[in-house]
Image (cartoon, rainbow, N blue to C red; front, side):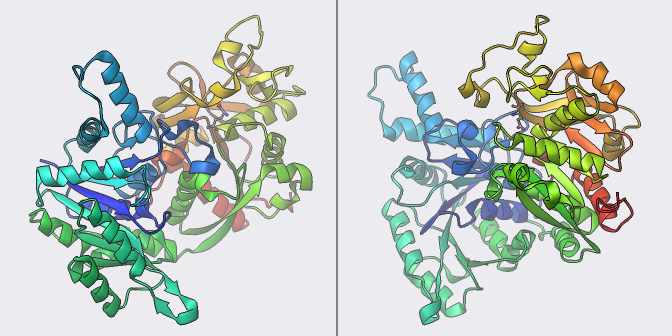
Length: 549
Ligand code: GLN
């Protein structure tokens, strides 16, 4: 029988509710429990697949190909048993879509369809589906208590508390305890108000997690407990950590997992956080340092590439390398020149959509290839590597992806429907559909060429990785590109290009899939480990430096 922990947030958004939930999952898992994790998002979009990275940060893709909120990435990075999927992320839009479909089918037998009970029942059923058969299901409610949009979700979780009882439901509330520098004071009032708001809709939190700059002094902890009707030991101080991976230990030291276990009547072994300690130890004691440039779009929005940034850091943890990531706007490379990449030990071109800065990305690939700088291309980063090879290795002037130039003389990347059509006609493309249902999404098998850098990195020739893209390398150009020196080292079961590499280069590897979605700090990821190992060698001068080349 699954028990539930509901995590709400108050005072302000962006307190790190996703990370807090993930860390709570981690310490409960460290006590031998299986965990499932759900994110409920109050916005009306059916899923975040069509949302701009400016609005919403990265779209995280689960194993089954669901486009979800980036918090699901935190969950998978922190909790091994929590593998997200279709039932792990529900938005208001998705809940209403389902209720309206039922109403149209006549499932409600003529009843007046209302928020209570129809919407709330739909939410409860969705949560139960997402919980699966895990020991504990952690459910994070997006937004801030007091928002109009989140009310139906809060009402649904309130009802679950009544229906399942206090020994199967725990409410955790995350708040902000600000420090006012002018008066040197810590302020508990916003927390008091936020809990009052939550209680006014019928939810008494069992645990408060208070975000603050410094550890919460005991007087303030007492005061918060008194005013919120929460036991003092259940007021947890989540102070700013210099390292994300220290948070599980920080929470465990204050007894958070024990408080949850006690309320749920679970008699559990001690938490084993040795792996987390090892991650922190490795991160804090690097034996080398290296510079990696990430050349893409939205570079001032680090959240757009959060899984990739994390995966590069995991590569650093597993090679004891401090990885300094430099975010470089590809449009700036076009304008200001490629010199900004000269001091780099590695270059990454991440996934992306839209043509802004595309030439800058192609230039970055060329620079990495010609100067023996380790290169890792992800999705669009592989497509630009193919375009660069076509133009500068195979001499196919004007080669391009049809995503960016429909008239290109050499459509080396295009929609399958474009290049499988022998006439070579490029169809009119609908701008909107570039971000929609026609994408190749989710985990698929890839076969790697024996002896290739890809196969050596993975230590296997059969892998499974996640996808999110529409355009494919045009198979009609494969022979010509192979002859020019591009190795197609990974192929899908349906013979689509999954990985490319260049043999006489220290490390030049690119994938159509997104390996970053399956990297986690404890295990690292084979591709990122081998990339960062090459980056480290470059930094240590074991590979030719760009300046000397
Ligand atoms: N825009 C490219 C495509 O749709 C690449 C997508 C990506 O990098 N995620 O194929």
